[in-house]
Length: 378
Image 1 (cartoon, one colour):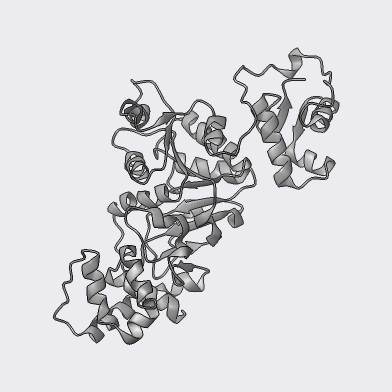
Image 2 (cartoon, helix red, strand yellow):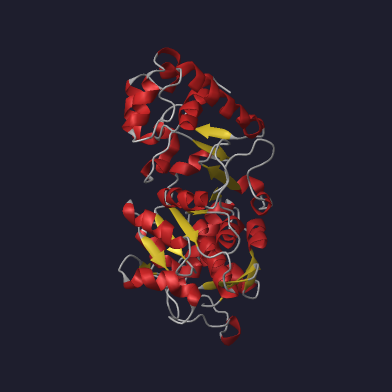
């Protein structure tokens, strides 16, 4: 562990928060404070209204105790973990927007995702309906294919469906855990480690190994889910759901909240309907409305119901229409094509091909049917 990482983690372990970043930087950084001005730790704690139970203790004893706490990070660092914040608050990206600013965070994967634009947090209950899970998966797939980073909490239910939908499009996803680092094993739940491909999944926790596991950590975690997103989408959630905490954190820092409205008699629509009633959220009818709000969709959404390819003769309209080459290939192959087949037939990077397909899907020209894309309009 480098001295820069060790110093910022020690301050965090002592209870210093990101509220005093300006003072830390003014003094030359965490490393210089610990080496030359350790007495300043008391003033840093007092500045962020932290109670100091050890005022009568020797500063060297305090630092020795903190040193022992951070030795437990060896497993995390040896297995590919990274500490964000050692070089300054800029490494924390959007996490700096949280209600409780951080000194550091602990990440596995792509460290650039904490500043990715645009990003959407898709959240909801751990016990959703079948349709709720399908909707979370489909919306995440659509957003990811359009270039959005999908963020969620890695819980069973809506969260996992969102992560799976995002990576199914070939995109990446960021899991914000409510679990602290562990001294002996991986902090990631098995279901998160089991997401494939692993290279598309990054995980982040803000809790060091000196913090005991508790349910309250998941509520605290929600503010960082909100901070990392440019918009929040609640798919399903009850009135006592943690999704309401995330929504409140989001509203506090100016992140817009979207919800899927539902039947007033359906408990799973309770959180969404309450936020709509209180004027704290927008109703999402189609994913393209959210894409438009993020400034990454220019095509006009088509609302009418897709027509089965069997009901229309496959005749191609003039080549001036968008992606005429793709439509011609669909017609040639009988109206049904897989993404793998398209990659083999068209010399385009998969990311560009996915964007073309998304535009055709939003125009109503094609629709997704399992692993295939189906031509619906010619």
